[in-house]
Length: 143
Image: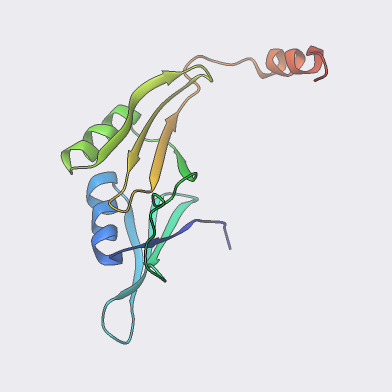
């Protein structure tokens, strides 16, 4: 069984729709509880990039939902800019616009309806010679 995050959200059905419409996730399966409401939604953005949504187990508090946690997804099909534009068209809050980063990647971060942050990263932007990178790491002074 692969590793994947589980997010507790206010309304799993609404959040699942948002993830599908705004970011292009696909529904793998959805389970309803005895009350008929969605009790679990399994979504997939791409291979090995799954996400489970379930109802929040308790009342929210004053801390921002997901504070200190960011989910990062590698973009292998399409572009970070296209993902940001799609999310924007569906009313997503763009936390950080697409931008080239010093670590040789282009990234953007969006917030879902519950405030969880998702970073989409694409790279490397410039070809890397891994032998040279590793040689630099080996030659670096000890810290």
